[in-house]
Amino acid sequence: MKLHFANTISGASFLPRRAADSIPFSSTRLREILDRFSVEPNSAEAAAVKQTLRDCEEPAVRGERKTCTTSLEAMVEFSTSSLGTTKVKVASTTVSKEGTPAQEYTVAASGVREMGGKELVTCHAEPYAYAIFYCHATSTSRGYEVDMVGKDGTTVEAAAVCHTDTTAWNPEHVAFKVLDIKPGSAPVCHFLPHDHVVWSRSD
Image (cartoon, rainbow, N blue to C red):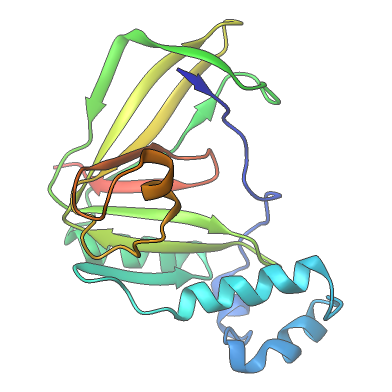
């Protein structure tokens, strides 16, 4: 299969929790946020900040818990509380060579390993002035770790998620268009970019 593993954002860093908690995080205070980080109101960066706030304020779909974490501590707390344990496993996609182009990959002999537990928390990096992760917990997804080798010898340890129930998803979701399926008709599986993470129980 032909794949391209790349960072989806510029590698923004988490702020210390005390600092993050002191900064407004609401679309009603967008102008204040832009001023604080010296972001021009009509810039592409401002548009990205606005969209991230909008996404974070959208209600969760049926059967999910969600939050946008503004610090590493908040991500850990949401993930462990959602999974009901502090004994967790965290997986993300790692690539042996930076800047690897799109190419054909095959699954390595070590194969595919399913992550444990019936609950899963997936955290997606969002474009913002500092690190923000959109995290959602569900019992209708399954996590996997997949070892692959590229045509040029690049090795990838990929995190993958399969959503087994998509009945509550927006019918206009890009996955339905790409796969030519309807909500709830089939599982939707995808690899995670290597600045996203997935949490599962380790016990």
